[in-house]
Figure 1 (spheres, rainbow, N blue to C red):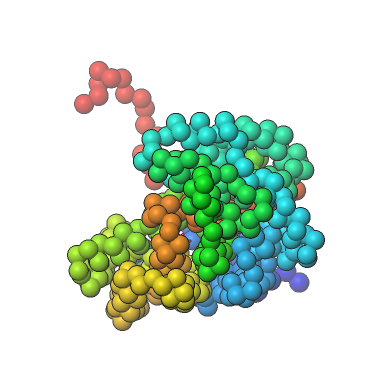
Figure 2 (figure 1 turned 30 degrees about the vertical axis):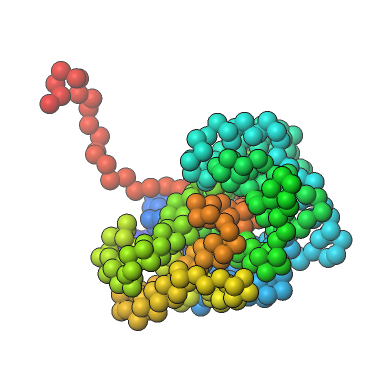
Length: 432
Ligand code: CMC
């Protein structure tokens, strides 16, 4: 039997159905509230609003749990790789051998970027933000694949498999092209025979007559970084993808909007901000106490980057995995990065400090991911574009849920208006 919550406003009671998710998550369904009582549910920033019912990712922020399609993130990190996890996130099941092969083939077939698209990239100043370039390139994809991007749910879902492969594979290629363009290097074409991550490293670092051969540790580390970012429930950029997708915008346009949201320093851009912070601690010979003191001021612009999370109130399981991997990867590559020592020291200091402890602020995935990317040879300004490659399966899976929902509505939140009350127009001559 469906349980009901009773909301009492003045003398009248309004029954509201209770929803219970697979893992016992409880929600009060307030959809009828406005029609029955004239009230909207106010929740600035949607911090306590279930904006959708989803089958992709389960996240329990209080207990540091993250699962994709039921599989715990630590098991995926240990046993899976990025492409397999991408398939899982998008299609709901781990692929069997044939499905894995076919998916890999589709990714390989769709790796190259049309020559004409190079001109779009080259219209940007070389020092433009890589995230701005990436979102522009992705928003141009519908022009090259109009048959897959019709802004019609039914038609777009027919071409979904190919559109998904284009998004995953070409976003990776575009990121490598951005790097080459910014460094005045010739573009390197993808190689059919290389696995996904090795192919990316080849497109980034090969020279015309000298192929870059990724050592297994580097390819593995990249796989881990991308896998750990594959999806993360209703974060800012994924919700943006869903919102844009809900207007029947095609997959590429919706992902492009997600990339714009991801660029912000409070979201995907945090991995760059963390490295700037660690670097300046290093350059100044500081022990990090200045950053910790500034972060405690409460000012948004002085936050300790890589710390805190909108939903994790215990620990970010991805941060634990990536923090442990940092040591292993750097050791295997023979790198002694002073920024890793600073990061560890900063983490210890913050976790002894009552400000961070009482607010349940712990390192998040971005606190250590930059150190691994730096060890791989990725320049700092490209870090967030790697987050975008990693997150693309999550964007795709969420877009698909929106597009495939027969009862789905366009996303259209309400607001509570606090502006001036009605007033009459004042002619220019009478204005002060
Ligand atoms: N440094 C200092 N104070 C902080 C921080 C921080 N990094 N994060 C939160 N706080 C404070 C915040 O000011 C508030 O203080 P008070 O109660 O005195 O007003 C309190 O802690 C609770 O904040 P919150 O409600 O947990 O924070 P939020 O949900 O508004 O923001 C966040 C979440 C991730 C934007 C924020 O923690 C932050 O800005 N962190 C730094 C940026 C960062 O690392 N972002 C990457 C997030 S993980 C990757 C991703 O998915 O995007």
